View (cartoon, rainbow, N blue to C red):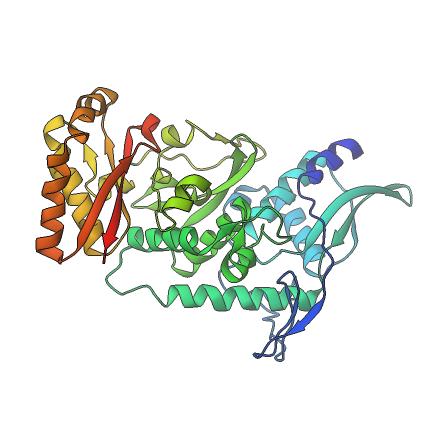
Length: 395
């Protein structure tokens, strides 16, 4: 059992890096690697709502989904471990089989965005039985300051939403914001946190996922975090719109280094609001220790919502033109279209080499929006029948 638990929790371990102090104008003291550790106002903790934690937990940083299906015993253990982690206790008795602890610990990891502080778990034999020993990478005050900073950043993003946006448009706004404003960083110590993505603008898949989930919570959109594998262990999101679940993978919608270097403002949408069938082309969804929702809906998929599905060769010009001109109208540097079948895509390829196709769109952009542009296209997601048009604006 000890070996089993150690194997489970090893994947959750992160090392704390060395730091030096700095002082900012707004009263925060920060580590050199970006972690807020002190603030001139002591955060007030709602003890009635969050009596299991000694640190500040902003509204929207608790996102229960998987634990809702726990049985009574698992729920009691979940609450007990949450309280132990919330008060930064260094151990708790191992009362059940290690597989139950695995289920609880993984649920806490994805459901409690305000818990960025656990360094690692391991088992120790103590007083005739095993304990789960826990170490932390920051203090309660440091956690509070980090959560306060993430809350402030998230609320600034929420403030940019407009009353006419529906939930799909809000999700797209969050997706685009994180892609454009956050860099993937494998060396940053807190790249696995919402703070990393929202404040320091450095994240890995876990940081992107937790930041996106937090924004969804603040916007009142039902969601959960999903774990699984691509070529490495991976984490992404699922959201529920119109009674259907959809996958959203921000990490995989970021252009690769080469495309990003050439066109840093380009955003991709291959993994925005997609079904299980699409995500499983490249992702393996974890089915244990709990099961993610099923995603079969297509009406809120990016290409369906944006009218960018091409179902015949005759639609190539019209749909491409609409997608490109819509992007030009809002000053975006790219537009994407998707072909319904591979045969349609192959049949359209010869037309994509026809300069007249682009000249017509360029003329329309100039006439309708007074914008001089250059057009090109890339089959970055060609294996999924997707083309991305690159729009360069000429001043």
